[in-house]
Image 1 (cartoon, rainbow, N blue to C red):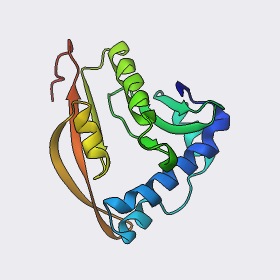
Image 2 (image 1 turned 90 degrees about the horizontal axis):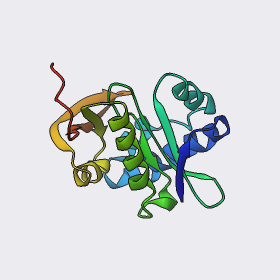
Image 3 (image 1 turned 90 degrees about the vertical axis):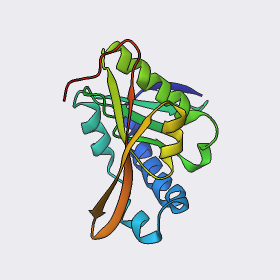
Image 4 (image 1 turned 30 degrees about the vertical axis):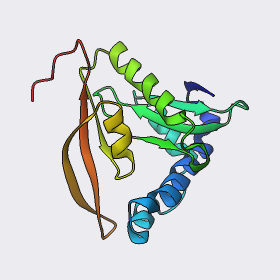
Length: 163
């Protein structure tokens, strides 16, 4: 298992990872209605190609056959928008290894604060990685009440940005 940069041919697989992660894993923390509102369908490969070209770092963890099993991104402002792992790879360290690469990139970019909107299931993962819970955020998605958690991590040696 290794982490590498996104390649355009990865797009279809990343959509499947997102969809299966939400649809299968999401049921442990969200209702059927919430899961269906969150992942209506498999996102198109073009979505990931667009993300990869907008200035963010998009990385994938791949298995021994170079098949993506997890993916995540880091935006230049420190936001981790996606960190998803295929259900078959949960517990293998794929997401943890990926996150560690994203945090190193944040240091390289001199980002002082990284932040996420963590799902119910991702909240313990990010807490384990040193994130602090800021608050629960309740919202409506496709007519369904949802929630996630605003979390942040201040990186050592970096000043907290002024708000």
